[in-house]
Image (cartoon, rainbow, N blue to C red):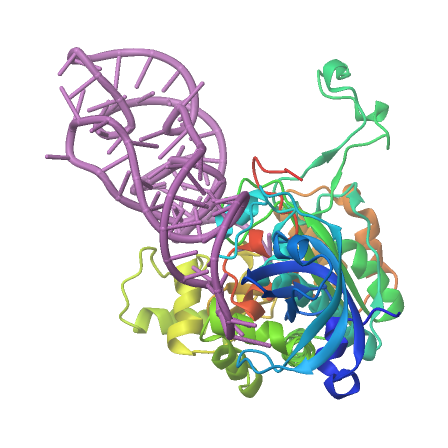
Length: 463
RNA sequence: UCCUCGAUAGCUCAAUGGUAGAGCACUCGGCUGUUAACCGAGUGGUUGUUGGUUCGAGUCCAACUCGGGGAGCCA
């Protein structure tokens, strides 16, 4: 007999009602009386469980009655309408095979656990309601992002994970090496001799695919990367991880306004997509994780994002009368408290902040005509803060070279990046979108460690 | 890295410097429609680690480890 998925039962109920079916899954909870009992079984195909009714007509009733949570079972029986209020249908079991009895020291109980505890059993937590919902949404979202870009003709570029360049000089990097740590070779200056290393030079894990993807942008016009990114920063916050995923689109013949339109369209598209494709999971988040979730997401869908310049943002903050821990001053970067005030108190919706002072942004961002600011944009959203950071890139070779020397960067190390400007360079722009931050924003989960299967953070690489 | 709070049974949490406790989980028994099922009984502890103060430390002190919240860096 062919196995039916619980997802099919919920999506095409009439097809299976009063029919004989076979189900394979794991016991989520069991309640037993003297002569009958109930099992809630989950087969992994769907967020919700199927309730099983069984009684002592089963040959192995006594064994079934002693099933432990998370035991694997295979059932045959009839799908019938349920008299109970909490489920539309249930299965009247005629045969239950115990595939594997779960050991009694199984750490997950029927009761609620703290996320902190569940992080210590990251190999078991996908079996809980919350993590089942988080990781199915993560999967749906990843697909939605590809679908969005592919539908618009963007080419997916796999930029390298191991890199010889130090993109934007941003953050500490993880060194990649096959040198024997016990016998590091030093050259005459006493420095490490990377010519003896695997690649014949110093290499690291990537902190951004942007510089590489810009080269493909000049060939395919519209491109994007979507892959793992690594930062060796000892950041200990609910929003940072040493290994995370990032989406980085890049568009040729496009300016900062095109860039912001793309970011806004992308966010709205994936919100719609995940609401449509994972409604049970989203209902769960709205009910148990963040009661304002739907209101917040609908607000994003139904509003045009606000646009202000950095200079205007400083004015807003100064006129607000709010007392901030950090002073508001033109030329200084916006602090988290400033960003949150802008998006949560003043605009109450996503806000693009553009045209930051050139001193506080990266070397590759395009200098504006005022020669004081660069064509950068950050998208701030209520609750999460900065979710997108992007810019129009400096395409003018002389200006880019000047900027690099101001930042103390060695031109020779970026020869291929500069070549793009020499050989048919054009205006272009792009941004980075933190995948985990999107998941947090769309689910209401507040810690990045709870939206990554096996999170890597300082002093933590278990599993 | 800085500030701050915390760590007690498998889990969630109690315990005035003076005998280490409850609910859930687990084991056994009861119960004919349950929904975190219910009722009864039982098992379960080197109180994060190391050192100190004290007649006596889960409780006070110090360092360390890990975790939460905030900050910085950013995505």
